[in-house]
Amino acid sequence: MTSITSQSTPASDPVPGRVADKVVIVTGGSRGIGAACVRRLVEEGARVVIADVLEAEGKALADELGERASYVALDVTSEDGWEQAVAAAEATFGPVSGLVNNAGIVHVDPIEQHSEADYRRVIDVNQVGVFLGMKAAIPSLRRASAAGVGGSIVNISSTGGLIAYSRIVGYVASKWAVRGMTKTAAQELGPDNIRVNSVHPGFTRSEMTASSARSHEGAKHQPLARQAEAVEIANLVLFLISDESSYSTGSEFVADGGFTSL
Image (tube, rainbow, N blue to C red; front, side, top):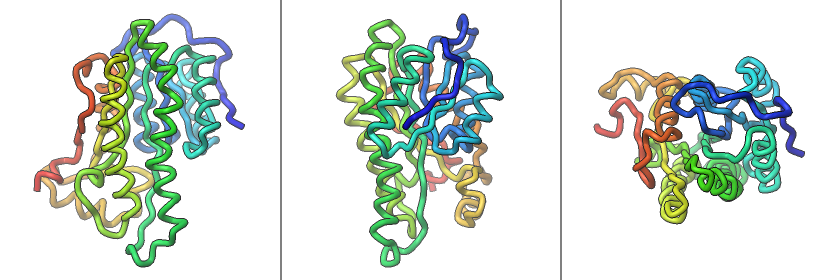
């Protein structure tokens, strides 16, 4: 069952900010890039639902941020879970006007050593989870759009959705798929004033990359010779959720320190 921890009524009057009229769901929102997105969106006035399987961390972040943030337990591979999460977000804050599909995992092994189960798990979370999220959120996004708020879906892909990396075949496959699904959704939802874009982070400091020698070494050789901080990716997501990006849809937004320019 999906459960939500939050105020029982919508947050009080909107606070000034770039996304003050927005209700946003962020998956994988308990830590890393997802948590940075949650923080920036709340700072700029949004009401944000932190959707994650990491219950303790998600609840702690929601408690820290106050009435403008809620936590919902969500396995992004569950269609029923998604439907319950969107319904809970609407009941708490109102129609969803923003969705950040950020939840993702990686499995590292050469292709011949990848088990089918490992490959499918990465695809299920990174690719199928994005599909299910968009599908579940579209009716709510349409309601928000009809009320004049508009709508924005931001799908977190990767530089691995623009180029390829060895030893992470499932991850690369899933991130290329997210890029393609984003363009299809943008075509379908444009008439409803719902925009859909993908974000492609490069080497970013996070829990998932903390032990990755590739992330540390790769960043040393790019034009901006460092890893990104999660907030730098979050600032790009904030722009895409806001009306500042009102004419951008079906596009890739790259934040990689220049890595893919090499």
